[in-house]
Length: 268
Image (cartoon, rainbow, N blue to C red; front, side, top):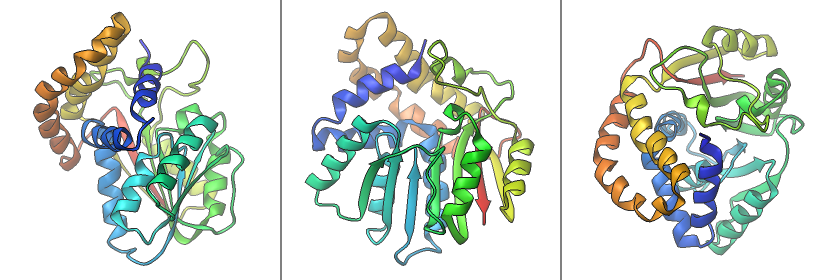
């Protein structure tokens, strides 16, 4: 059972029209727990960065984090980078149709991309597990950050939890290269690159894992069994939506001794 093909299918359906894309962004923001955690960290960062700043959305995908950042502060200058050219083209079309001039997307590989001292913030959400050499990415990000810039990323952990998020990744096609990461190991590796300090915390504790099963695992399994299920999904999500909101709120505001995900912040 793979999460990405279904996500791509739904993304293809919802991102062909500007209104549907906005609905898609809202759904991702509400149902995906990692969005809750990333949004919380971005809001904390934005309180000290109200003036015009430069941001890199590395591995931007559908562009939902770029959209969130733009709505948070239209003065931010945001570059979305992704290796998939079709996603980049659709994102640019959407933003141009909305007459949003401070966000731009380009095709690029975070393994290679580097702009010396160009960004105040680099956002990287659930991308590293698809990268062959994370240390190379860490060096590129470090060099691309301005002094006192921040690298904000989310990744899966390598610890044992009640859910197995990894089963929803591409494995047979070889796209996913890493199952998960150890918190201490990542902190050491980031400091070796040059980051002055690294802060990390667990995400997807027990409330988040239950939410993930309701909002992702079961719908994906149903869609794999019968694609016609997409017609009934709105009813299903209406039923589980309030429950997932409560669980996501709990997971975002609780401290976790362990979890299925990690949030890390590297300070240059």
